[in-house]
Image (cartoon, rainbow, N blue to C red; front, side):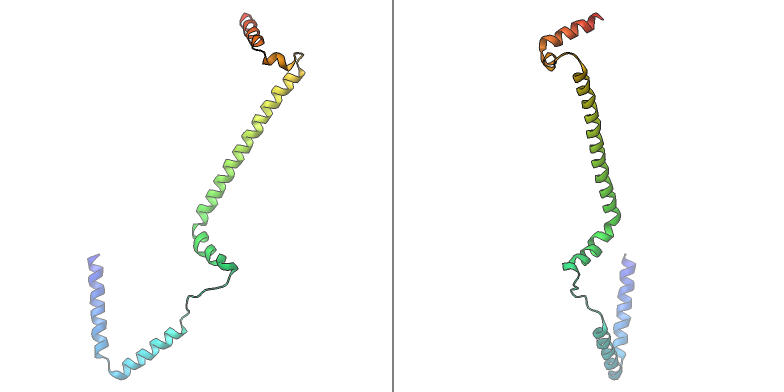
Length: 126
């Protein structure tokens, strides 16, 4: 790092010495050329584009487009898995409901605690 700094110092020193040795006419020509170049330089100004959305897209979104696409994909995947699980649970509940409706016992019998005890006794005997 110091070698770069020393090199830059030496260049600046040589340029300063060279500038001091220029005659007045040459210095004025260089100054006029510099002013001309600065007048033709494009200035960064406010540009109208959807109330600044164009700048936001170019400066914020595009540099991080890959990460943004990955995040959107991840969110879509999580939502997809959640919806899939909901469909699976609904299918399981559908099977249970159709088994209950196809059975001869009324639904209240399944809610009775004594019936659960009777079921557990008979299932252990089998």
